[in-house]
Image (cartoon, rainbow, N blue to C red; front, top):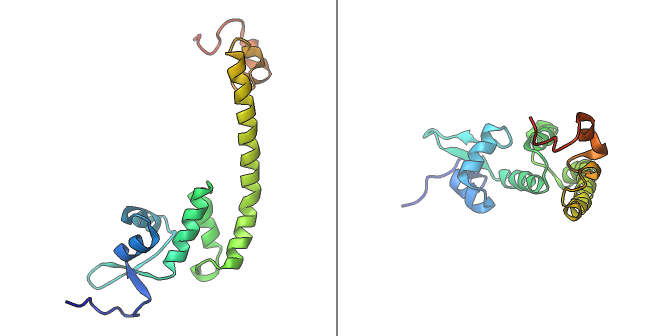
Length: 152
């Protein structure tokens, strides 16, 4: 048996084909569609059909997610593209440059946290007045002596 012909042969994919080609689970495709990150049309039989360009859009979404860009920012970036088009190489360069500053800031914060954490392990929490993680600038000391985090 042959598959039903598509209105635009080679231009539309079923949800299963998109999942297979992109590696994105069907449930995630449905979620992305509900969130307005991707779109499809419905056939007369109420089946989803996606344009092939959705594969590039999904790659864009997944790469952004992998580096920690929140979906709200991804959606805003995609919404900034004219006519909801698929991101081009130039779009990616522009958007990734915007995200790079935020990623650099996160990296600096994580490195500082890592360095503070190493110092914390060395103190064994006996010097809580100097702990940059739990008690920066000895703020807990203002509440009185003793284990302030454990007392009501």
